[in-house]
Length: 594
Image (cartoon, rainbow, N blue to C red; front, side):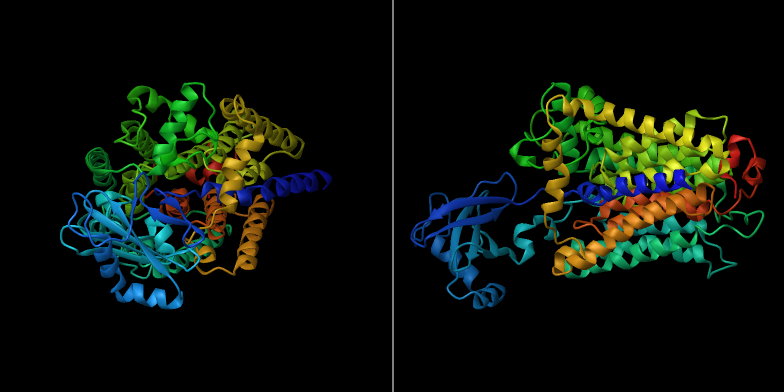
């Protein structure tokens, strides 16, 4: 009892640091809006206006004469913007507000309206100089947050197109349809996974007050579903996995969709700031320069992730180089493709180990057909790397339950550390990974297994931190990562969008910590289905408490959800007899039995 209490206390202390760290893993995924400041002595204020990142604005004094090379004058564009009903409405709320006109290139104007003190920008209008047409008009959070404006292709490029997204939705759910059981719970589970598409559609049309709350119902459903799957199964042998499409055809579909995804990434994808940050960090590591606190101005806060995130990009930066600017970034494309292929391979290996090749193919197919994994690939983000590291730890855990296979325990400890030092949220999975299968070990060996896990975790963490600590202090790393994210507001959660809900957000975060600790020490389903469901539940619970949530975070938990949902079924061909082996068997495959 004393050992168990000590373990529980240690896990709780570790996880208390994981909630803010989880927030740090939820870094922004778009180019932040730039700001331009001028001293307005006539108004007694310093005025700051917003522009696209890297874009220069030139303040144009009030005049009826157009500047050189322009058709409209500053007075004309101010009049055009002032007649807009949206601007008139917001200016009525701020008496004494005024407007300034700025030259944008090419051949565009920006009109910014400010409160009377000049301290708050209340409206922004973009006007075409040649036609005088209003191109954009924004108020509220959409002034500062350019990613909230619904610019086409800003995230995911053409993966958002209906002629790509809708067919993928159909392809994702089609093989798992069972017309004999139309009201199967699996059908509902898959539809809920696709329900995030509704929220994304509103986001793409700049309807943030609809898109943000609509992301929570599927998150809550999936959390409840994963918790329900933690119950120990009643049947001695699970029902067979029935696929509408034969497994060999599904394998062909996997190959075809991989080719489609890679081709689309090479020809169409854009690299958002997350992928750009990976290349910058990789270059700094290769050059022996400080990793934190000195990123270029067009991605100033790109150093907000764990050091392993940047280390994972080093091979690609070395192979493809970097020009020093935010260009096509072939290294980021190559890294995103490689991470995506790793996810496919790991899902196949885990599925094959759990139930045989049919489940492996089904899981790989689910990944390549799910539109949100393509969304992440087309954004060239680092979020698939999070999924890869978690899946690798789960695969290692499948080998580590047998007492004679001790190396698996050290492997999962090392992989858990690297996953947590990619984006910090997976640190909350360390207790689950440390204790999975521990009940199957003799009592006298459990402390040794935990020690092996802890040592491997510490050694891997030290190795990953070494390039950063060679130049930066722990204080600098903390300030640039966890502290920055903890202090950063965001409208992409109910907490940041509506405000005044700090107490509720804190309750959700504490609940996520308690859930992670509780699932690590309480009796639950002991096979890989139980581990996947528990890890998915913890990640989803953490995401529910984040200040900044985005669709790129869905791949963090999606493969775990699919492992839990499909892993409940047995291979229809009965190709793996070990899948039904008793949980206490000494064979390694006992770890994946039901």
